Length: 397
Image (tube, rainbow, N blue to C red):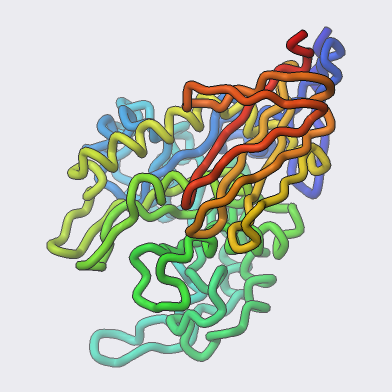
């Protein structure tokens, strides 16, 4: 017997179903408090692309995307029609044009201007002034909400969320305390950092900065806001290197395992030449991103269910390569999502108390299984490996 309930946890409304058969509370949506916001279905996990032409929406939809963030000089009637015809949702600015379409269900959220925490341009050739003050973001948030409280307000912050040394913040460089105020001005807090193509040695190649930023936003919002983050998948402005498909997959799952509830791919590229939609021009990367997106969508009900904080522990044989893990319980099965957090090899041993006796653990998407005994099993991790596990709650013998 299943009974639907609505409850409030850490300030976020969640729709749940209590299933007496398996004794589980299953979260179906962190967006239920917004009538016209993102879909309330358990099957919806936001997978977005940043500032793209809606004329390409169908191609992105085929690659597993379901949301656009930002519209160039929009929204216009044509842009919204193209998105609607492609089954794509959008988060855009609440400007005069947007208010003409306030009843349009394609719009699922409103957004601030990008990266207000960065030093702001004073005009061409005039240098940069300080960042936008957090109070301005809070005031704008209240104004947006007063106009339309039925959709969440999205705020994307800079790499300063993850890296205190980010000089792009100007006079507020190395002032992480500012973010405690910035996040008061949104319902969905996001940030971007692109470690593989980064120009500074402190960050370059250190994929774990992505996870660090997610962790910080979770901490700074005290669990009262939904957290999203951006993912690199092109050269952006780096002539020498770009993320490999494996590194992109690693960044994606690092993000989710550390608490991100939505992904935004940054697909622009300026080197060797400008390409607004470089992901669509890269067959290998597009294939991998499509596979990642479709796997996430298939696992959306699991990912939207509560994380079991005491559901698993993990130890790594190589102290220089920690392994991060997240546990979920859904429809009579335990799911463990794990990722290597450094560029190196290790063997990880997992202990999941719920897996009593002898169990067969399926490694999702890898066509292999592992035997677990009394909740303990081990697996090998190559550099930046991701392994996703599923085990039925019943014994194999």
